[in-house]
Image (tube, rainbow, N blue to C red):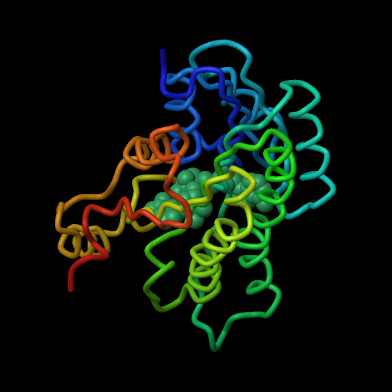
Length: 251
Ligand code: NAD
């Protein structure tokens, strides 16, 4: 019996083959969950769902900044699978530009995807979870949930917001039987970091700055997700756990 046997999980932005969402969906499926993978492209989401171990997984197109699409996806999940037990708000983008050159439209776009969407999708999932008196919401933050870094101001603000959104969810939804937590990944080997991984100076900086002297692997984020998605964490709510090789703990 897996840790998530019989559970229905939705992971947003999980179609990217090397992404944190896909690795999380795979580990969820290995532990017995039925997983709904959502992403921008329906065919890619379906291909990612087809790639998961076990039966019954679904891939659906859902742009998390399109609230009508979020409503329709939530309704379709309930219609087809009957419930949602676990939501991972994983979809996200990075955008690098110094603040003095940053357009307001780009600021809003990064906030919309990385923060507002977690509220909208979280709210739609929590309405369904509340009816059954149980559920798990996991929001993906970042080291920038705590620390700023030059050229990524809107991302920093969004991920700082994710930390406090998680606490707000815990404050309001705890009495409904829903635990809300966040994970702050360190520097992970995913497509989002392609340019950084192939930059020798940045690679050396990450390894020098991280006590574990390496980048993180998507499976290592997924392992933390499993804990927060399972009954093992039923009295844990409002927390952000950093899966970062110790980076945020040291100067
Ligand atoms: P990734 O680029 O591999 O995956 C992100 C996914 O989100 C993609 O599949 C993309 O299509 C999807 N997406 C983007 N915009 C979307 C939208 N509007 N609607 C639906 N889906 C959308 O990136 P990743 O590294 O796997 O990142 C996953 C999450 O982890 C993100 O929230 C990111 O901010 C966070 N994170 C990543 C790292 C890292 O080092 N990789 C560190 C900290 C936090």
